[in-house]
Length: 442
Image (cartoon, rainbow, N blue to C red; front, side, top):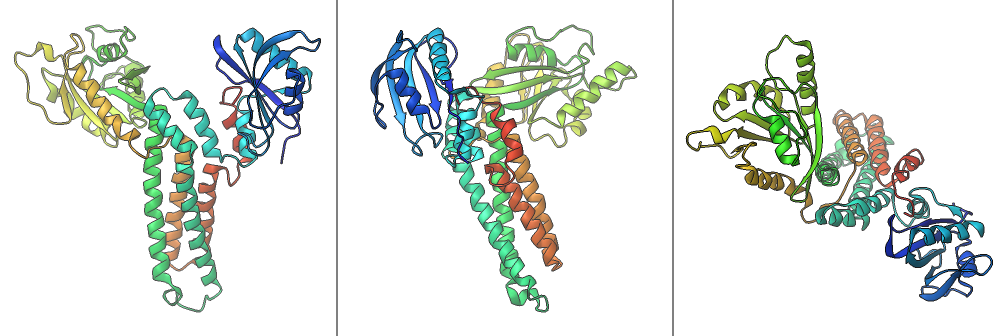
């Protein structure tokens, strides 16, 4: 339903700049813009204008652009006043717009109106924010693909497949006396299995997209005094963690976010894992093991002088971690180089030896996230896809036992879970949370 209130905000980044943009959207946008400019604004034409205050005092001069509904970003009448990028002048322009009847926009309200007016679906609207905050070219390109609808189109294609299967199932319910096989049961099962495979592929791609957006969660783990904290400091380029020769110095989690060759990593230093009766140290180890359940990658740090002493104790704790890289630290203390497997590197956090190889390996491990066709995704998208998978599994189980009503219910729930991604289903409860994270002016 169209909003009757016109909103206004500064649409350019905070601070000084050569050009600053004040954006208006709503039914009074053109009227307000023409009052400020003192001249008519043509559709999709740039007009030089002198921006005036209520008493005719010159505020600034610049370019005015008018986009008529529905051919605009928000689907409403939109006016952009491009002035000099002085924060003081831009605030005065906003105040003038408010005096003429506009309201200061809330964070993300322009994108929210674009969604409500059917210009974007919810996943595309979120991609706007991801594109703005992208910190490297891979993330920016992936966000652009999401904004172009790559993720949304694949989701909607799956929704169409689920809906078609549901229609088939519900049609067979009317012929309960007939064997399912005579009503296309084999075709139905095959289509459901193909849809489940496509959904699994999409979820895997979305998980990569989430990591591309959020970065890799990397946990440093190993026995006490192996050099985990020294490695954290070396990767962060600062003395973030306390380092001593006393085993067990690190007792709690220590987190640092770094960028290595364009890859964002959240590094988590943990307490050394070993048998201990110390209650505080035991709690630190418990937290370390919990953190491993959230890890995308574990850097298992061992003392290169006796790596096997620590490796065996870590194997069980690392079970289930998606990727593990074994680091033989303190390699500078070895008399001669050691032979290592492909999943291991020799390094020295103290001297920096091997850190270039570690950077390259980290970049390679993250490289699969931003390849051709990658798109950004969020935790809620991955959660929705996981829920859809669970419901399709239930539908398949019920179909195998020819419990058609229950199979149909599973398909309905799967369809609804997929619909939450683009806001096609039950979007209202998500809007406030999602758009409140946007910057003002978007």
